[in-house]
Length: 175
Length: 103
Image 1 (spheres, chains in turn yellow, purple):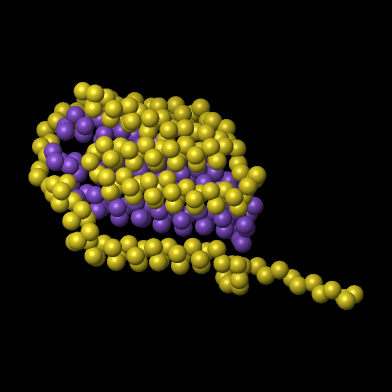
Image 2 (cartoon, rainbow over the protein chains, first blue to last red; image 1 turned 45 degrees about the vertical axis):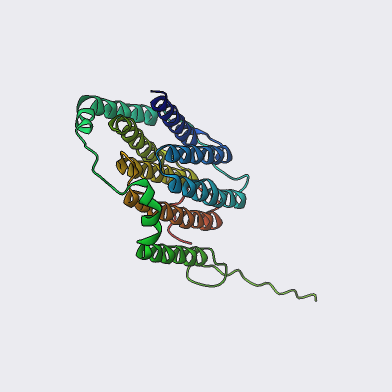
């Protein structure tokens, strides 16, 4: 029962932090809350007996993506947008959530009770499976990362190319 | 096991809905990318929970979640570089002001 309660507490923290990430106006604070949210999600993955996913969640989301966001915010420091909270959208969100809660409480919980877990790969074999039979996956991920690096380099290039306006060169006559 | 499913699946769907709300209503491009990341987190949580067995998480679900995380990171990287480019050209990250179709 205590175990169950811990799951609920961490999930509530996760959802509250996600809401704060969405609604906090200062982007830097939102980013800090996003890092905390990713860390809590990593703890949840650890509770669910998926330690590898927890480590990758910490490394990728709370580490790499946060650094990318920080670098982006650094390039546009002081010129970020401040938004007002819109009442209609909040009401829309609350309505959607209520409808979802109703749908779950009526039918879906009963349907979920009938799910019987099938026998998957046990945890002891998971590292073996994760690192042995995933050659194709890892090749695909390597190509994906390569394509991303190429795309980011192409987007952020400063030299001449399509869509780049070259500034006029003014010659200094006096010298 | 089923009790865990009953709390985790609504929570992950809630995360996805909140991310979609952020994508649909926010005007700042960085907030929109944060919303995309929240959606990805919800999807990852859903994948792990659906792979939950009595003796741990199914290894195939873990491997698919790893691929999903890599794709999420790539999406964030490309989106943020596009945002930097947009900011260089327009001087703002407000989506309402990106109507001009010239560079």
